[in-house]
Image 1 (cartoon, rainbow, N blue to C red):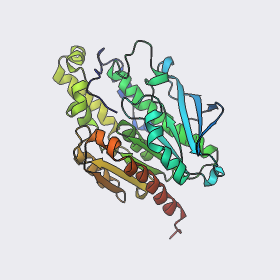
Image 2 (cartoon, one colour):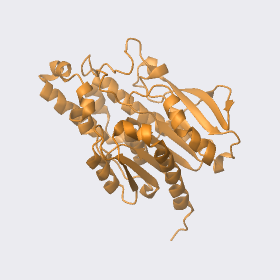
Image 3 (cartoon, one colour):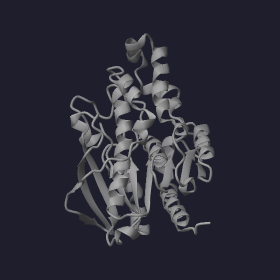
Length: 323
């Protein structure tokens, strides 16, 4: 979860300008890179099978300390053959280190519906945290861009790994920052995909420049790199706009997307959630009467059912007869 107590970008912009120049349409459109996952022995927890794995990140721009990706698989104890086993990839929210929060959120879904999930640890977090970084407070805006770009590349590669291993019913999900990247993955995936987008909108520019998260950003320090805090705020808006969903293709099956928004969200403005829904024609939008933190604390069941129903929508779409 996002916290205004973290101080972001205390060491300035870093390589943000260079990274922004690399993030062209061709970069976003490049096919996902194959990965090989090394799995530890699985363990059984109730009706859940859990195994942890590592892989070499396909995103070579990451610092070496972040290049080893960590993933956890949650699957039903008695799983089906791969073609019949639906699987999600879930990306992590801002500040969400490790797998405990997402395991608590999705365990009941896996046990009760049989839908499995791969949980990705974000670059720069947890076991992927660079030396010298304090907690989840990324030191430069370049690091923030690297994390976002790495999440996109790795999320697509994990879906490709699932597809290569025979899985046909695939989905992507995430909360907050994880949902932003999940929406981008859905936009850049070449096949129909279930998408449960939990508290994300069409654009994240205001997330970094106007809303509650912006109070955590060291704009005065960033301003020393570019001639003032106002200029720093403008440039950050330009960089973040590279991730605006309307700059990217529509998902192959927007009807298989369920979007959840919070009416009183101070981090993700509700009108941006509405705009994403309107952009993805055929998607379903559900509103919760709470703020950003309340979504996870009070409405976990709604989030689980959003993922379940997005997968059901995908099944209906891929099984529909061709006109």
